[in-house]
Length: 159
Length: 159
Image 1 (cartoon, each protein chain N blue to C red):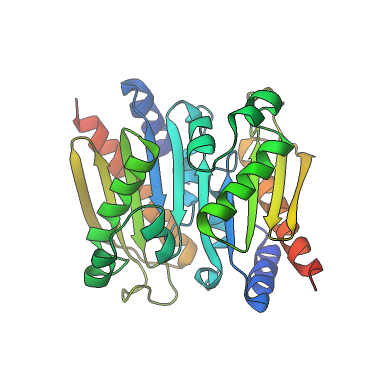
Image 2 (cartoon, rainbow over the protein chains, first blue to last red):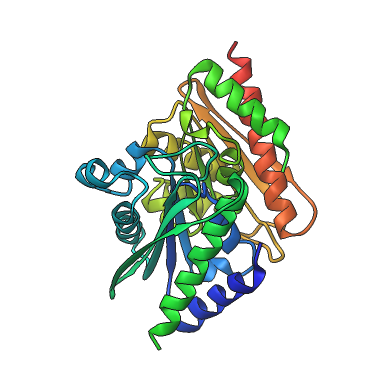
């Protein structure tokens, strides 16, 4: 676990007085667990919704059935809608979402290691694709840490 | 991470064709991350709602304000309502909830290491208190593993 980036996320969120929420699929809660590994997380971290089934992505996060039909659950579009969904559900200032195929089997038609990460806020939403290598737990860890880097970079850029 | 109890939970849930959801507070997502550390979790694991703030416990999980006022967020009663809340939200057959003080500071008026874990289903809800020792990550890990044991024992007992 990369404590340095976790500390940086705590610092930037608390420094700017912003709240954070997450929506996770393939990471299964590891992102929330990393964020809460350091004391003080309750000052800014509101929630993570681990939406492991399509039904929860649709029913709780409000991802559209059309998006899943057209692009699949492991897609840039689904990650963006998951972020928007948890942002709305929790009224957090910033939201981050991860959807991917942790392996060893493909998931949502995507090869193991493929993940999409989105960061959203009142300023917009950005979603990007990644290809990680390694076993299931290693892919989860890399995806969660990449999400932390993206939150840190995005929020830092706001100046 | 205790892979043996994770494997047993996979086996019993899949064997009985039941679905599982979680609501987490102090563990921050570690329980969901443990469940999804083994392939095949998507066959039975629907979601985990990491409700790190009181607002999410009330607004998303439907814990009553009166329960939090009377018993605190770290209580047997709050754990039971969190389990009932996520069971209803996700329509899972079995739900498990954890609320506690991971430390190093007290939380919700409770000393570090105190945690309450509830398991609920159509058959009822059982909530129990525990006192773990160790640092923040160790308390989270012990609480998540204890929750897995309680799920396994409860579901196994159904015969």
